Image 1 (cartoon, rainbow, N blue to C red):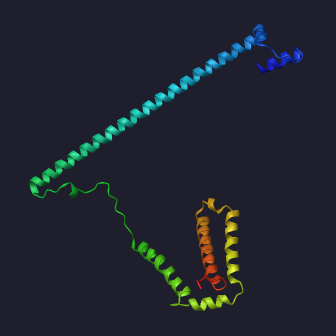
Image 2: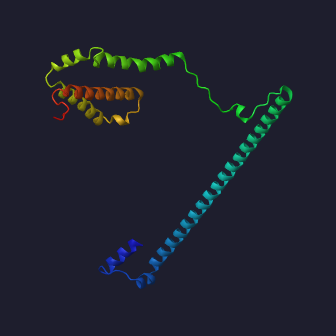
Image 3: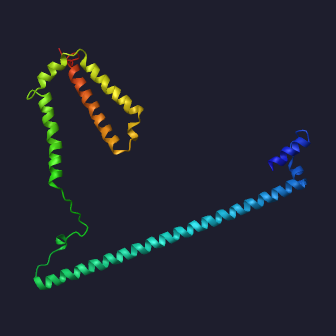
Length: 214
């Protein structure tokens, strides 16, 4: 229809066709009839698709409702069987218990191996021992501090190294790493960055002490 309008404008020196001109032209009327037929068929297709989806939704709801009723009936039958069994035990043994004494059928028992316990203990104790030994007066904290102070502007180099690692992680889009080894590497690099920043702050305390009230 737009092509017809362009042809009409070319034939009439750019004159835009009016509604009367369109109705008077047989070609335009034929094109409009075809467009109306296509639009009607599209509406019919949409209505059929909508009706099909509604029927599928109703079928899914009915299936879900039937499944829920079956589960409810099975649960009721199971609870009735348990009640009958408890009543039978009470009649024969005289050891009836209340609802609180019933065992939970869905309880999950988690087993922890000795290897897992030892690994957790080592992962908890070893970092604490290393920290106390390297950075406290109980161990070699004062000696390490004195050795590190021999390097000029050591805290600046350490902080720059941490910033460089962060920049590399950002450039290589480390937050999107999905492979297992890459995730381990990312965790290790984050740990190194944290340790470097903490060490830089500790070493900078001598040059930039905390202000005290005079």
